[in-house]
Amino acid sequence: MQPTAILIAGPEIAAYGFPHGHPFGPDRHDAFMRELERSPCAPRLERRSARPATREEIEYFHTPAYVDRVIAASRAGHGLLDAGDTPAFPGVYEAAANVVGGTLEGLAGIFAGPVPRAFIPIAGLHHAGRDHAAGFCVFNDCGVAIEAARRRHGLARVAYVDIDAHHGDGVFYGFESDPYLAYADVHEDGRYLYPGTGDRGETGRGPAAGTKLNLPMPPGAADGEFMAAFEQVEGYLEAQRPQLILLQCGADSLAGDPITHLAYTEAAHAHAAARLRGLADRYCEGRLLAMGGGGYDRRNLARAWTRVVEALT
Image (tube, rainbow, N blue to C red; front, side):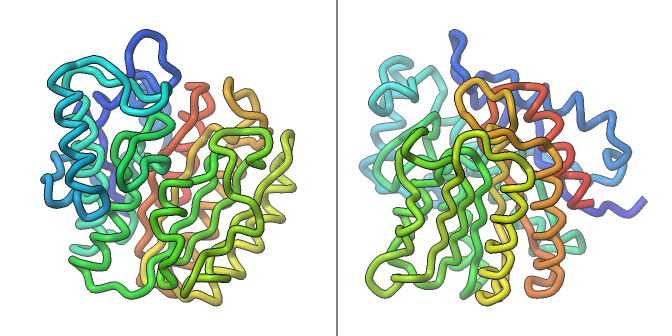
């Protein structure tokens, strides 16, 4: 059977999770995989393992001084990498490097062909900034992938779409002055949720002024509100005509997540993935890379991400 999408999964990325009851625990990967294996799309996936990103690759997005700090914290095996959400643990550098390497492996697979779509569940770490950790995110694999698409694959127009409940601030501010990154983010209003950013008026700075799209949603927003907002995302991307689409599909926007306040069902994620697949087919030679992102109710993330993979296949 000819594969129709690439899946990056395995113990290398499952190891990225924080201990002692942290919401981003290491069990998230397997919760998703158990649900995926029950899906009829499972036999149609080309399965690959992650690899560790090199330091040079990580520094496509991150500063050398920050990488040094993560390495030191990883060796020490304790302490905090940010103000309190992102603790160090022994081997955190290696685990985070595997997430970045897994995302890059998915990107490489898309360009190598013949399968132009890929999904990686433990990825989409969109809060990490160029010089700091934040919000459970050590290295920003999304930012590295954007830079890699440009440096390695010569793309001029990359689109990043984020439907996680939290605003993708690490990506947004990392490229806020970059007019060539098409950025669209549908998230819970920052007045009610970390990181408190992503106001509708944040549309880019300097040469990028007016090139970014932030769509904050009120607490309790459900599928109907999401799909109406996503029409704006589609119109924005139609105008941008990207050569590659990256989707951060955090499942913490589903009803019942323990740390957010939106009320989507997994149908919202299926809708977003299917609509982006159509746009990718029209403008990007099918190239679409989806990254799991957040999601702290295990049943929610398993079902939402499985629906995304089904849409990709």
